[in-house]
Image (tube, rainbow, N blue to C red; front, side):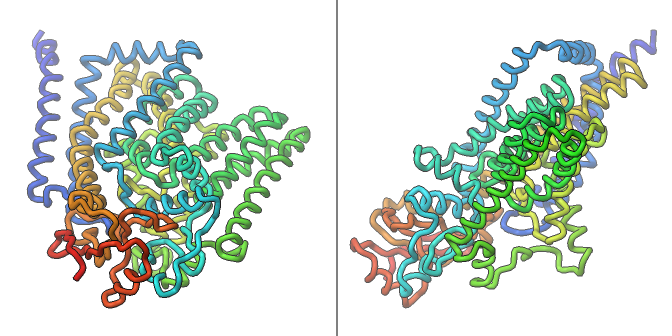
Length: 574
């Protein structure tokens, strides 16, 4: 009897212990700069490093204690629901996928307006917006302003050498241009994310079964990385949609090599991905190409489909070369190269200043560590992936994701951590699908080894870890993202509050690196290519400013914007 009585207090004691972990975490924050997250800078800042260490040291025990509580109080219900997932009819699962896709779309909208303030949080987004406006006019580039005025319109990742265009690949811009025509450019990535959720569910179901597909839906709904990247206007949601479609079509081809339509679908999806994020897509595709080649080799009847796949890839290469020729004058010269040469810019700026392979290894480990925290907001977000099924398609999914990480590490391109390690935003979906399979397989193994208690513990762990994310991860990163977005949006809020119209703002410097927590938007947004905006933002060139005022029509009033002691100011230009 005493034993039974004492055991009844264990869940309550564990719950209190979890509460102490939370209290200790927040008490430690006072000695760690209140866990302030710095933006606009590469690497680990000391307060964030302290946060992540405490997140592991106190978040994991908290998750372990909450797992015990949930296993005791709700484990039998979780186990019963676990068994029912195997019998969910396909129509019901489809409806669930649709509802979760809508839920995630709502979360993305909430994040876009509530945290990111519906503004560009990186210079890249401003570039994509400019490119979409140029494309919407029916051209790939606009004519630069005349040489005397050109320097006023130089901006981050914009080529302005007679042709005026953004440096990025065309795949994402195509989707944004459609949104621009429809008047909803900011909604493009939300729609893409919802479609990606449906494809991710279909991919998980095909590769691992319906239960894994339903688990993948749940994991996607709580993934801060997937939700927040999709709330931006970056290219990753487009690449995620294309790569998930490629993986799904590839899995269909492996199952039925003679299905010509799936070969074509795989080729088109991979081509679109390559036109959007060339390095990531090429690296991710390598293990899949091996798998598809083996499928074609084993069944010679697959030759027509394989030929269509190759043709689709060739078309993508030709389109990319044609686009390069249209904007740079050479099919073998990209906007990246033109910008880098003109501005003496290296895309390895910010990488670890160390000889190879140290810098590459650092970048690889840094990115994996970031993914470990951001994929699910857990201190061990990648923990379930090693337990995923070992099918050929699963191996291709895992190796493709790893290949993308290695590719960036080899080229020493430093990851930008804003809504997670954004270089790898399109990898969230394959990692979530693998995590769903890993969770399922671990639960099956735990039940086989430890019986019902093992199953209850494994099923309770994701819920406990999600609670830890709500108590530790989101209260730190959520407010910091809001503060960072305020800094990114501050120039335009200031102009709106001032009631300025028909004006030109000469921007001397912004507060991105002077006001805490900083921002990844170093420069002002781009103007419309026809300079029709009521308020133009241009570079402050001092004594030369009068030349621009003489050239601009319409008698615009002139103002100077600059940051003094971390405070953004706006004053009439004398």
